[in-house]
Length: 212
Image (cartoon, rainbow, N blue to C red; front, side, top):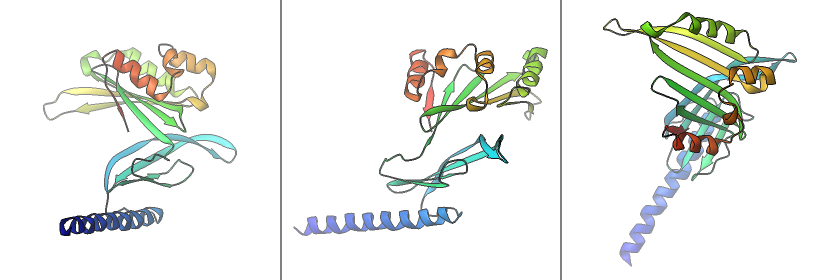
């Protein structure tokens, strides 16, 4: 009986600590301060669309996920609410990212907002010797399409080895149907799928995907 009582006391202390730390961290996050009882285990940086003076523009977007004892806190700059609290596995946070490895060089982020595919972000890393003029032209052409952005960035390691990162980002809600078909002509089947279906398709092709 004594052991049961001790166990109940220990469990009660843990539960009370979890509740108190959850409340404190949530209030800190709401006041735009960093939570102190949870650790940041994920950060998203990208772009989203906002109505600015009745015109849609792409703006920088960030989201940070903090994990505590039995809870998660999400600070989001582009969601309906700036702070979300998820307790014991609940998920009231509208943003989900699926990161898939297309091949050894290419990684693709599929960003879902409220269950709908909103952004596709492609990062391809290539050696200097494989950089062709067609890559530069593709970057320039993508910049001209509404809803898309692109960048070519050079990297050089300590041994002098040079690679290039090709960054492509498109927000589907800003693109016309013709542009979507042109830019993602090899991924028309993917665009019709939900998050779980995309993940399953990649896994069936023996390609890895991680959900954030």
